[in-house]
Image 1: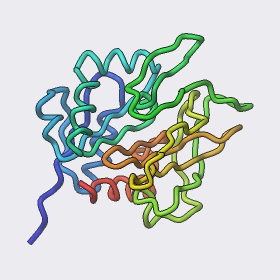
Image 2: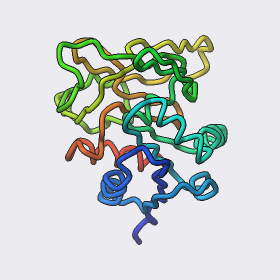
Image 3: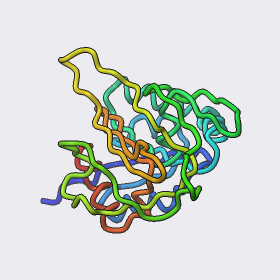
Length: 214
């Protein structure tokens, strides 16, 4: 008997490659819906928050559809959320672009700032230093390459877990000019700076790994 397909909502708030995400998730077996409907997004088995463009614009678009409340409500109930590209960046405390500071969702402390490299944006394929015991990168070789397009990044991981009974987030890094956070796994909240939906077989395996946790 075939297991039912996992229901995933791609949040449509005006800032993200929603069709690419939809195709990639459907390709690996998810039942995908693109919507900005709060209740449908709240009750789906998985929520994917894409994001392209400026941090401030993405935050404004997210708030227009009550996406800030949506993410908080889902995480409070232990329901999986995955952010991609700027959809990862807005999960941090703040973003600074062109000298303008914008508050993020503050699920993790930290600042999204300009990437310091000879060539910006960081556009193209790159490897990552996956966190130990990563579920997100399970089954993927260390030399797997993922597709990045960004000019801003989180360069320092600031969250400290003082309680030994709590599981510390798993942080994956990449390097382009300097090291930056490439992915995070933190309970029901996962995120990638790169685009798994544009990362070929490696990206498909990564999305499969996420869907398998739903």
